[in-house]
Image 1 (tube, rainbow, N blue to C red):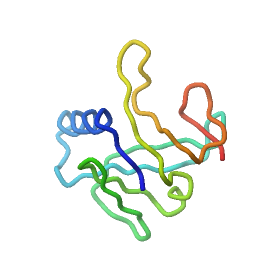
Image 2: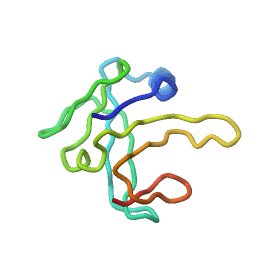
Image 3: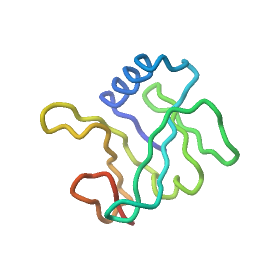
Image 4: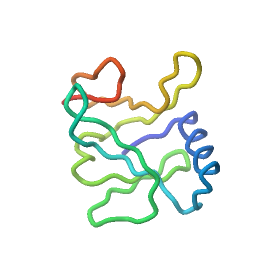
Length: 108
């Protein structure tokens, strides 16, 4: 399961409206190689499911990830922080053994 906080949900809806995204679009979350800790998160809007996609719904938001990324994202929470020290979207990932100082990459 991938969880979505109220703050993240609000920001996702704002972006979707600003980009005039379709109501059937969903959030695609994946893990890619890169970043100073070895793995990085990737977030996009999508409206096409692929074979072996894992589909979750939390807090009224549909979140989709590929099977490989799910191994790294299980029980992760997507959150959003705004303000002077805000870092935008960030992940609270219980599977990460180490994260970089900016929070954009991790290792397991």
